[in-house]
Length: 359
Image (cartoon, rainbow, N blue to C red; front, side):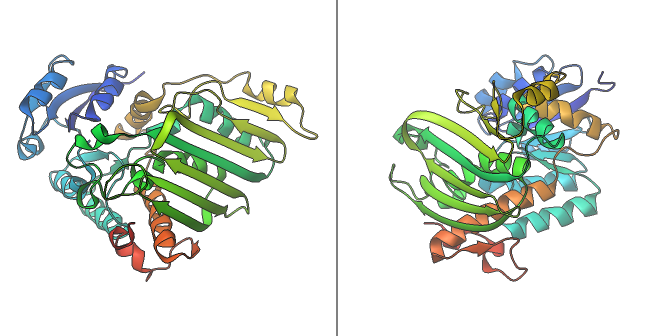
């Protein structure tokens, strides 16, 4: 039971619409206070979907409101860092879409600002709240998977010319990166959430599908800290959209067959016993699993007790750091044709930003 309703300002009515739906599914714990968008009609249209929500075009006016508990930033990536700092300076906790910012140096800058303001910044990784992934985590925690061996990630999506009619997409200065930063970043987060940190990266990125400034294809090879090996294939030029995850452990194989491409952590994942492990062991471990809300609804459900001071924050700036450190390593590896060791050294040139290393 959510004992308090927190008031949220959603900034940006694009992906912000999915956030509003997540709030609606948690209406006992949240109210939509205001939607802010530079397009007044978009702001008004989205605000009208929730009773009592206002529409606004001025971010400054939103931050001046005393009735906003959480600022939910859903703007284009290049606007994130300034919007986060402004919200912190106004005394607000912040939820921010991916990519959080445009460099590891900017993550450090946000960390300092959050500490000074005594407020929290939560990055958005809503795919973590899929019940398929949660079942895998349950098996890992129960010691039923054994050692991780290999994994494969397939992010084959379809982005045609009309997708880039939105003026900030496909441009280095505004989208900050391409398929590595804006598309496969979620599946890479699921990988590390399930298999732990990455130790070494070798990658190549390319622009082969559309005439844009950022990459739309990538081939990534990862060595995990555990020694497991991972391949990640990325394109925005597929005829059919697929988001496939397959994890091979010594005692079982886990995969997400037939799930919708934008809900890869959900659905009926398949867990197949191997070797001495019995299928009955897996079924018994999953028998008491209680499904929870998924995607943005799951994120807001997990966030509520932390906002109330009753639980740790479900996602932190350290999660954003690890995610963007991998992004940085992929871009640097591709640009220099070298393997990159993680964690990055304190003086590594890509920590200041991956922009100089984009394809």
